Image 1 (spheres, rainbow, N blue to C red):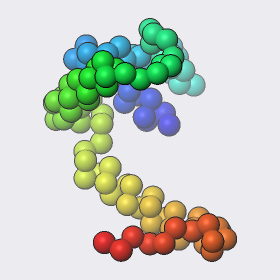
Image 2 (tube, rainbow, N blue to C red; image 1 turned 60 degrees about the horizontal axis):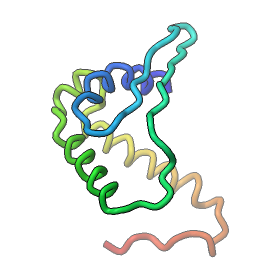
Image 3 (cartoon, helix red, strand yellow; image 1 turned 90 degrees about the horizontal axis):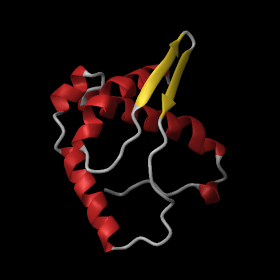
Image 4 (spheres, rainbow, N blue to C red; image 1 turned 135 degrees about the vertical axis):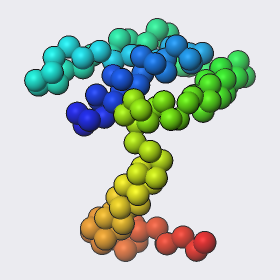
Length: 113
């Protein structure tokens, strides 16, 4: 968890100004133990989504996906191959350790493709 929080504190100050919606930027308040604070994002809870909010979300995702991935890696985001390897290991661990604990009628059938 600490590693992820430290990565956020390096990544989000760089990324947030590139995005069309407000993103809470974390700040380290103390190092030992690590204490991080995120400012409250402005706005109100969404009651009923509408087309303008869908458009805003689409623009946000487009801007997010245009971010320089090499710069993100320099700021501590793990490279895609590393993330995929970690997720595959986690999924394998889940299949071997967690699924057997479920009653058979609660297990999803394995994917066929």
